[in-house]
Length: 242
Image (cartoon, rainbow, N blue to C red; front, side, top):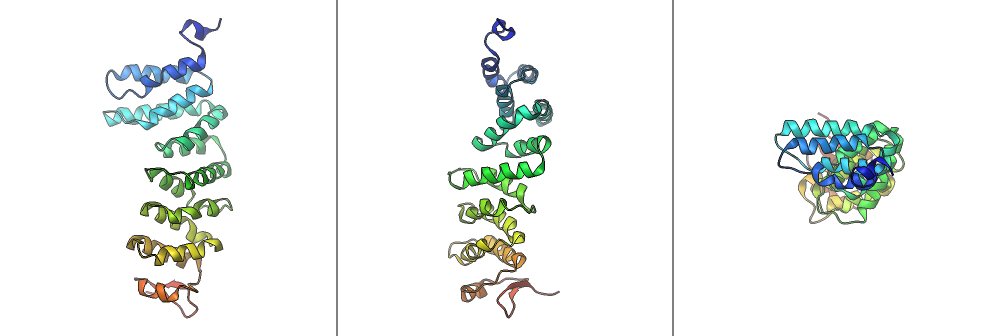
């Protein structure tokens, strides 16, 4: 009979039973903090999964909340490679705490592997409805400015997202990457009748960064040009010289 049998269940079962205490927002904080520490002392994936749930709730006072989350972060780091699979699962299934999951992966894996996970998660999200756009925006911001061939095809579908914030985040990723397959979708977004002005401005910025021409869309693009953007003779969006 193992130690956890005396404590009221096997290891994984014990960890799962602690989840209500870890996510308890009210009452004595020491109950939650004791459960967190118990999980940190366990060495199996279920403990990581339950610890990750702490990132999905906010407690008062906020200083306590921040301290506890940093403590949970360090405990999960202590699981090292055993934490990766639960974090990936959390990132895939939870709409909350995406930035914490990415921060953890950044501590545990080389950057190319983190980018691969982001690309896989974005590909999954592009074909599944999510009510809250925050997760998409956080992931898109994480891959922004990074040059990796897995990024553009994973990001392209988000030009058609329902959220303007998601569209703009996707445009900021795609512009500098000069991904040819994005040219026409960016132009369609720019010239769409229901496209918001701020998304149109972001599309102009993406076209300028990419150096793509507006062939096939010039008549629609010209009325949408705003400072500092204009079309040169070859039909490329450029910035007006100061």
